[in-house]
Each structure stands twice: as structure tokens, then as C-alpha cells.
Image: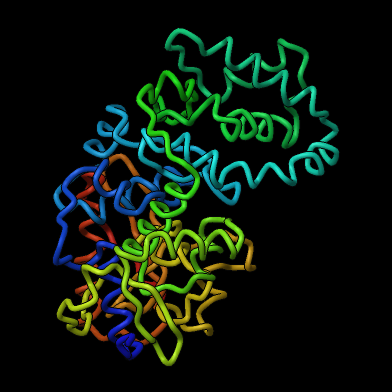
Length: 369
């Protein structure tokens, strides 16, 4: 029989799954281990992606994380929902084949809107593949210039679409920045060792990784995160059944990693400073466990998909923050969404101080209210 959990217990388990509290069965100590734990981590904004890793790797700096990405411990591509994620390098290809290709279903419509043809897209793949062959690594600007030299339009959103298409087709991937510039490389050359999985095996592995990195979750949450159909999501969860346990949260059946099913559940009191594009919120469609609906507009202004960085206390979002990085300090502006007394503000500044340490700069704080 599934165990009944209160919302507080479910929140404590979810924070543990997300590696924001000590986990009883794992202590990931490298970028590779953290990314593999989740399977995929949102990283459309590189600075957010770096801090998502840093928040789970205490004591590591931004330079440490960037060096790990240069060592190819993980890479960025578009494995699901048309969104850039960090994924384990050796898993990129099967993930693209399982979930990435689903985003191709609307590619023809988008190309028509942009004035591109399927032949243009295929030509872009060929051109980029040739330009990057032999260990080449080009910046975004260089890739676009190469496409233009081949007679392909890159104005407006055309260039972005062609770069996305080449990566979803499994030809290119996003390599680490050179300075502030995004770069691209050939996937086969950047990650020459690729795991090959049968479809059911891939569904099971992705399901297990999602649940262990986000649980408790429902089958619909997994479908929403992965971009899979609900039928395939349920098929993956069924195939991963031996590694999962079921619980009920307010009467709703949910899945959790079996390693957490019997783990002690202590009420969270942690104060965390998380980036905007973090799995803590973006890994779920239903965020009410962590976010008061009244604060939705402050976290996602205009409901435009651009998430603000958040302050989390006891598992709930209590504020948002922005940073301005200067040469000698990082200035952090904090907007509380709930009442925070002096002691709570001191803890928030301590949490944000860990972000400043990650950047290797002292922090200055500006409270809006």
C-alpha cells in the first residue's frame, strides 16, 4: 500500500531529491555526477545553469564548473521540449532520439513562418557538419557567418532555428563558451563515446532519473517535463518500477525513488538562493508545493517563461533576486514576497553570499522593501 504523505513531508522529500538537502544514498561530488543524477538540467541561460550546478556542489567555484564542462563532463543541447538542457555527454544521442525529435514535429510550421524550407534546414546541417569537422569549434557568430556564406538566411530567428535544428538532428551540440560567446561543436567529436539504448530501456532510465531527481511526482509531471506522450511516460515508469516506490500526497498517487521511501523526513528549514532556470521550479508543471500562486507573477513576470532567480525558505519561494556583476563586487537586489524579519534577512544574505563566493566576488545587498 502506498504511504500517505503530508504536503510538508512531500516537500522535504522533493528538496532531497533535488539535491538541495543531504541525500541518504548519494553524495554527488562532480558536475558529471550531478547532471547524471537528474538526467537533464535546464540550462538555456548559461549563468543560471552554472549556478544550478554550483548550488549542489558546495565549495566549487564558477571556474571549477566551467572547467568540468571543458572536460566534457556534461554538454548542452536541446534534448526535450525545444529547450536547452545540460545532459550527460554519453547520453545526449539517445536522449535526442527519444525525446528531442518530438520537437521536430512542429519544425515545418515554424520554418514556413520564418521563410525557410526543409532543404534550407538540411543544407544548414551539412554546412555546419563540414565546417566543424576535425575538432572544429565555432562561436555562434562564426556559425551564422558560415551559414550566410553558404547562401542561407540567418536574419531574425532564422539563424537560431537552423542552429537548433542541427543540434536536435544530433549533428552539433553546444560547447562551453569562449569568453562570453556561445560555441558549437560536432556531437560525435565532442562526445565520441555514446551510450546506445533500446527504446524501452531508454524510457525506463529517463523515468528513473526524473523521479529520483524530482520526486514525489505524478506520471503527468514526467510527461510534461520530458515532452513524452502520457502513454510513453507511463510505459517508462512501469519499466522502472523496481527502482521506484509509490506514495500518496493529499490523496494523489505519486512516484518517489525507492531509496527515499523509508528515509527520515525532517521539516525543511533551509534558506537557498537559486537561479531562475533551475529544476526546483522548472522541473514541474504544478508548482504549488513550492510556490504560492499569489507569487507567480513576481517569479514569472508577464507569464512569458522567463523565471526570476528565487529565494527559498523551508521549501517555499519567499523572494526573488537579481544580480549585477561588477569588477570588484556582485550587487544583489532582493525583493521579498513575504515578511522577512532581521534574522531571516541575515540568513538570506548568507545564502546569497554563497553565490557571491561561487563567483569569487564580495557581495553587496540592496533590499527593495
